[in-house]
Length: 213
Image (cartoon, rainbow, N blue to C red; front, side, top):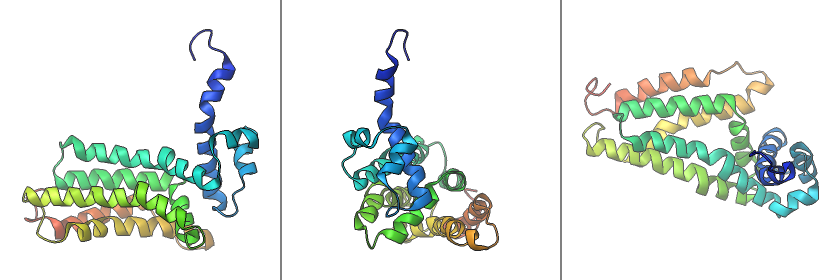
């Protein structure tokens, strides 16, 4: 805050971000159907009326959560690829490490579980998650594979299928942690899973084993 700036002005400008952060936590803890706008407003430290100044519906709030709290992590991943400093194997390792750390530390896996579990009753959840996150992430990986193929690093094959192969175990691992570990399943180290999976899948993807490792 700059000297002499009224505190209330800074607070008002910060409110949308505070509401989105609170909504992320409440959605992760309670799911979409059970999340109440009253609870989100209380968690954010604003009145329900103030919340409605920024978000008309719970769907609007979920859209903002994905756009402002989740999708920026995808933008950071895209920057890793866009930098072009890494070869295919290096990019895959960096992306897997970044994604597994994010899923292990934050509430994002819980929100993903919410989307899977509640999208039949709330199809907009799946649409928002796909358009702003899942679909973009798959396209990002598909483009990475296609670029690797063009450079002769990656063997021939459907790059979209390869993208699913890269992402699948991490998605499954994140959902396993959210669904089964709370009811007694053995712990799962997502980062160790990602590291082992990357080395395994690279053995199959690289056009010449060892040439780009």
